[in-house]
Length: 565
Image (cartoon, rainbow, N blue to C red; front, side, top):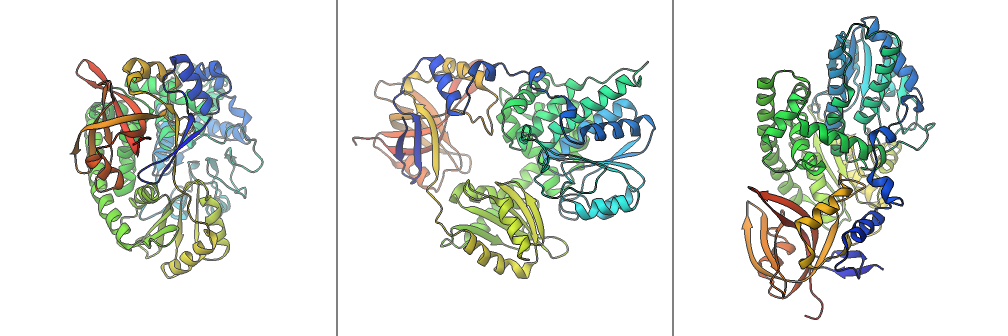
């Protein structure tokens, strides 16, 4: 049974198990798993890397990629690793760097500058590394011109990527679960997951060839912390192999075996390191370098053997992240003030906005207005650079493809929900008109899906620890969301610059601390500071520690006036 509630912010709540206000733990865990499409709970809970890991050679071209890389290593050929400037690209490069460094291979790496070079392979860099054997990770699938240039100049390139594509590029080998001729089994993998599988294959061939005779073999399991970082930060579904990657990788993170990851952990002031910790704490700091400085900083952090250097880089990344937050807030305010509220999409442009931050702003605009959001700035050559975030009903990759076909968008690509493109500034007006014809329907009211009602009296640390068997939580396996009905706001205050903290209390005197992030000066914030009637609230529960004591904190997302009031 599904119940519906309309909130004070005009969101629609859909509660899956509408009558389950207080249930046994086993039944609640089963209901939450069922809501996520889990058919075999026991198999889901017992997912192991050993059982989930495929043979590397199930992927088209993987055997060719692995054998050619192994030969390059054995023959001492110079190898260049090309990556991207986000966490997935950084981690993909870093995992190869750590592996090749252990082997004593002859290698270097290259990550483009977001502002100067843009995304993907570029001919200038390929010319610089023309005498190297190139491994392109998290990029390359759509670099048709650049790969043809490499081939014509005698440069061999292996591509290990996960971006959508339609035409096979002219590479020595292309490993991509989105190849048009590939099976559907592993389309949810990020590039670092694929890179790890590739390294497993290389390691096997090197062992079989006797390469390790008299040498210490690398411990590949220790690379899974980087796989976990990328899998979470690239927002791929945490199911199947990805679930196993993150579950195992979190153990490596907590073991603090990578000196750079250890330096990030040392900065973290929270208690428990989870997939969500990676998402909201580690990810922004690793990304900050590529956004407003050089992603090379993050690669150095994840590959250094020097604890002192790691500590300094981690602190520098933390400082860059603070700088990024200030820039982001400025752009957000300007984008909101310039947007046309009558359109059912957002397309904001300013030539001076920082190219590295507009993607985050696009995401915040989408969350705030529930509209496809495009934020455009200019690169150093005067060309428009756009970052986009979409709603469920609009496939960005398809929209960009149409824009390129019609000559409006110069180039671009990405995923259904997040993408980017280049555009001549004088065609931004044409882009808006194009979007008006493509996005005709009014955006539907935003929905919040909840697993069930849960009485405040049932919320406890013990309950949440029982539910934790379903972790790691993230894309494809969201942290359970509950509706707590018929509570009063006994206390409220503004904390930080824009958050509101409240105490919720039921008729029996049970209470819980709650916080609504970034809610000040919003409809939700006004209600939290002023509402005197009983309310229903929706959100997620997390365990917070204060010294030795643990308690439940409710992350409040919305509220509705309780029935019969």
